[in-house]
Length: 173
Image (tube, rainbow, N blue to C red):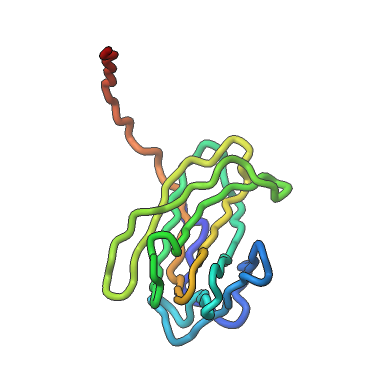
């Protein structure tokens, strides 16, 4: 079941919000029509040569069922980042019906490259109190550099098959 699929962004994208923990470190967050992977436009974040710039695009998605598994996938294109692995942050958070945090967020770290774009995804079960997923696309603690986010999807997936393991320990003195 697909709960979110956005690949076209124009003007002020519906449901997407921007923020920064400190206004003096807020990057420039805007819709860019020159870089796009899918439909016209992409969600862009530019550090603007501001040391330590940090801020996300964020969207809350309703219809989450506690205990069900979800996969969040997006494509990004980064330019000018000195440490891309630490500056690009892709997070799937959870919120209860009142909008408060419900459980711990999941961070994606594996990427696949296709031309100048990278696909990043994370899969996780929704915590017990979750009623909303919180999608966060960050440019974090960097300068200089820019990132473009596009083709964003959130879908309910079947739980993964069990992976049984044997664990052994040894105490050596």
